[in-house]
Image 1: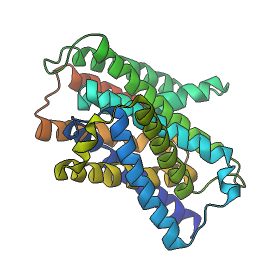
Image 2: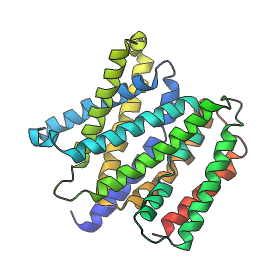
Image 3: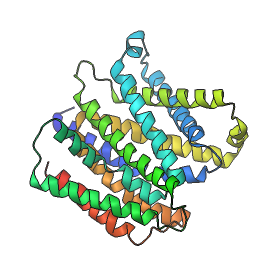
Image 4: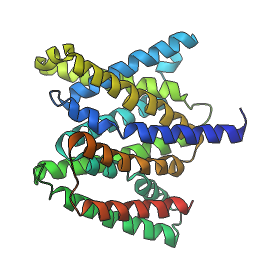
Length: 298
């Protein structure tokens, strides 16, 4: 495949991941009878089954050398942490609010760039300034929402969403900077994401002895939602994002995620009757303009 075709495929992969991830909050809310760890266990275990089937069909083996890859373990752990942060945030804060805060990744990519001593243009300075103003307005709007408690729990959800955005930026930067001879494939990186996520969450659930919700897995509606969450909102976008991160620069990959909060907000209005507070819209617009300025400078 030519360099140009590889870039185009990477762009389409990043675009699809942004759109597919916008459905996450809806499925998490539909699974309201489950804890965050149970949802992580379910979505990652489903993803793990399908990625193993993929390896089986391709006749790829997971040899001893693969298990010793520190890079693959690191990528898997980062993405698994992102899943946990996002699911928990969606459970305690509005979908539209969480979605836009988790997509502040270009801001964190720019902060990383500055921490490396690289210069920042005036356009990027404007972008990060507008982005911060937008974040503040979005957080204020969320605490005015009558559908959620306005207190420490709500602010915790906002904070976890921002940390998730930082984790996603770090994932893209880390993946891009891995030397080519040590860089795991997108499929292998996804395998470790699902393996680490399902293993850790299942271990914690098992040791806690809290298996009371296990009977809910037998409900067909819950099973359908878990399959949709595991395949549409987890497996496919994770594979696509991992591939895009391996062939595109980090800011390009993260910038396409600006589409996610817009669609997520409309999905929340349609399916959850969750209408954001008035301040959310100008805050979201200012934030997106700031992120766009950062992206345009590239």
